[in-house]
Length: 293
Image (cartoon, rainbow, N blue to C red; front, side, top):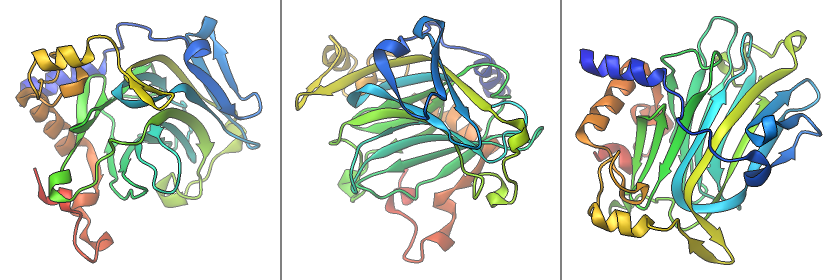
């Protein structure tokens, strides 16, 4: 257990080795009336929230499976009422979605990391965590590994959640709808901080969240076709149908025994909400995937 703790602490200090793509090339600011700005020649993008509006950006490409990384430095100080997001989503009433959301808090209190998975328009699969580091002091890497068998959420390379494909047991899985990357900073003080009891302090505005290191090693959906990086399928085939995390392609990636133990350690120590352990929300019974390992 001590070695797991040391491993988590080490990973908490890690930043992505590569700076990733260029925001001028890979993304576009989609709303905010000038409150989103691309800086440092495209290496960084800052989103701003003031009393008038928040802001957001989206990827130029749509993806159908991939490994998406983003380095984020969250709003420092009193961030109560603010929500910073990084997520994948398709469009329409039956959309799929994979969410990272960061719920701000008053100065000195921890952020809440909120995760969710929507399939065919249905969500209600929330898991929430406290982070084991201050996410406002420096950039940390948040990753979504999305392949035909798993949706894995990771922080600084450490998995915190694994939503598996249990279609054979009647559980819907996001695998047919291409999704675009979105990120935003917005005001949600009606619910975000302590259930809406703590409102945004606009005297502290403007609030700023910074993004860099956007990297999409992914299959791009264009002209009705899936275009995958060269070697994706070959690497997956060479590592077997279910390649272990850290070896081979993300296409067949799953958690190794060590990664699984690390994930469970994070969940035991830092998870503060799990929909699977909240039967009051589900009078007809907890979702089927909660009963499956």
